[in-house]
Length: 242
Ligand SMILES: C[S@@+](CC[C@H](N)C(=O)[O-])C[C@H]1O[C@@H](n2cnc3c(N)ncnc32)[C@H](O)[C@@H]1O
Image (cartoon, rainbow, N blue to C red):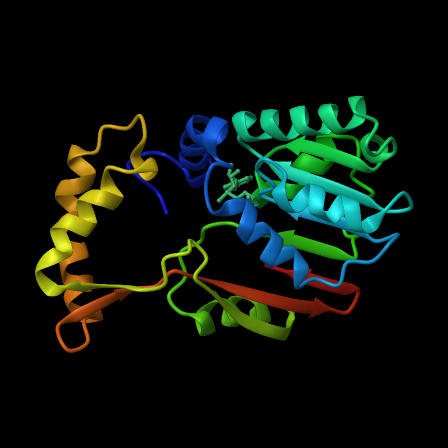
């Protein structure tokens, strides 16, 4: 999704740099536990965590792969990576896990340009050598099926699909047809638009939102689900998950 002249990468950087300090005062840590508990990451595995943020999945994976494994995390927000690096240093200083530093690598970069990220870290040959590629990120998809369509077109085979419900502990909320503007304003004035002049965006997006809101209504109510899609895909070298 692009806001104004910003690219997706610029939008993510703007939003997550400003959220980094209190990102974990949220439902994300609990969600990361649910996400990683579904993955059969084993000792010795090599894991690539895309959009690793403050490292919630990254450090969970690092604990699971153990001393013989490795975890590489990639994110473009310096703020989020800064939190992850501080956690890594604190774990090393506390000697809670003396091997942690040597098997964990945090890289700054855009996951849509992974070749460049790996090349600039001098790891061009490592690309593709992972048992797991994890990515938990907020993405906009048309439906659960549409994402499967994208992945299968890229040569991946769906292994499992799960709907993780009550992610934020709220369950679904049902809104009336007349609440389109209220919900739009909540979204448009939230973290999505931090530090951005949104007047033009609102002018263009509001009528589109109202139209989609009306289309989504069933018996005059629109359901906003508190849920995440979780997919595990397999390729012929190993497993990829989101
Ligand atoms: C919702 S947070 C998720 C962080 C972490 N995976 C978790 O589960 O807590 C989304 C993260 O994706 C990162 N991100 C978004 N787009 C990105 C891109 N194109 N390249 C690298 N990181 C990106 C953001 O900086 C942010 O840290």
